[in-house]
Image (cartoon, rainbow, N blue to C red):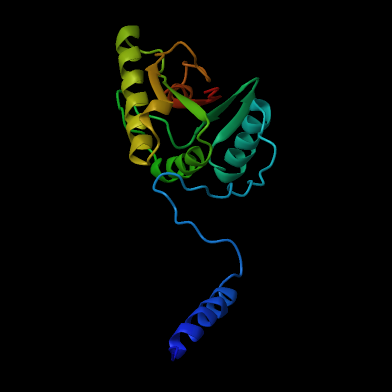
Length: 193
C-alpha cells in the first residue's frame, strides 16, 4: 500500500510552524471597557505657595510691572492706586487721563494671578450731597469693572462699590486735593477656594 507523501510531511510541517511561532505568550485582544493602561507619569511640581507667599509674589510683580501704580502690601491684601491715571473731573464717571494702557498692564497681571479677588472702590470729593457722591463713586467703580471684564478678567473675581467721600487721601480744601480724592482704588485679596 502506497502512502501519500502528504501524510508524512503535514505533521512535520505543523511541528515546524508551531516551533517558529512560539516566541511568547499569546496576545489576547482588548475587551471593550477593560483596558488596563500604565499609570501616567508623575508630575514634577514645586511646593505650592502659601497664601502669604502668593500675595508677596503678586505684589512684587504688580509693583515692577505697572510702574504707574502705587502698590502697597497691607497685611493680607494688596492696595493699588493710579494717582495720575484713574482720577476724575467733577461729576464724571470716566477718568480724565489716559487710563487704558496702565489698566491693561494691570489686567494682564491679574489674569496671571487667578487665585485672587479684586475689590474696586470708587471715591469722590466732599463737595455736594453725600448720597449723590456715593452713587457717583459707585458708577466710577462699575465703569472700571467693565473695563477689566473687557480685558478678560472674570466678573466673579470683581466686586465694585462706591464709598463717596468717606476715605479721602488728600485735603478737600483745594482743587488739587479734591481731584486726588476723586479716584478708584483696587484691593487684591487671596481667594481661599
